[in-house]
Figure 1 (cartoon, rainbow, N blue to C red):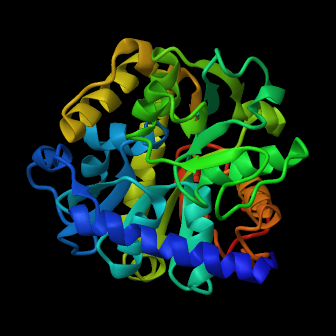
Figure 2 (cartoon, rainbow, N blue to C red; figure 1 turned 180 degrees about the vertical axis):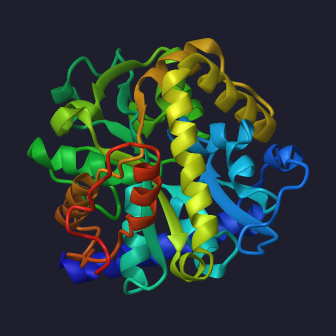
Length: 367
């Protein structure tokens, strides 16, 4: 299939997917406003703004946002500018919310960020910081799959057509010499696009033989008797690859730079606290997940999942470029022009003020 045709079909499917989510719950479900209750007496609004709307997933790979909201780090930096948060199930719906102005700043994976940037011709979003690396694994049914070569001919779930893990699995399968149609998922291995919420049930029912998924879904599958066959981090130099970025509407960045700076400062503070207090941090993340989903993660899921994620301010820009190349090779994306997708100047100012090393945009920053 020509790349341009694949791109059109992929984008059509990706564009349609948010509508299913939005019809069910609007632009994400509203999270409990832990931070708003902690507005300090006498605090002032930043840039005169009443509120800032942030979005993230209920995944541990979005732990910076989970912990920052739960512990009030964002609200502390934003003064009397109220933190309003929304939780999303998938990247396309969060990009849609960002483009519509329903959120201002979001935590999101690299593939939705790339798609959102390229679809808008580079006009709608910027990546302004990193958040997490790692936390993605291939977990399989050990009765059906004993080794990596046994994956051929099996049914493997990914979260969504064209999402970050979908691209990673398709690229890995291609490197094994296997052919898979990126749209239908059919070929030498069958790719089953399955929401992370239902993947554990599908695994228990035997309708899938494994899954290439982020945490905590990977550890949920292990708890159900699955075997971790591959940690994606082993495929990357130094074991580092971007799994979560921070993005912002370009218009919002232009109009409210002090608010963006405050959010970035809170993110840096949160990551520092997470890395210094891993046990307390994972509990804070789990507390917010319980508030949002009604169910906390058990220790046998939470503990291994949290250990596999690295929280970092560095967006690991060179790996985002590599992930874009993987999407092109998979037939899900035409070769994109990512020049200008990053604006790391505000983050680097924060890092300098904190005495931390600055981060690099791999030549993909704004002029």
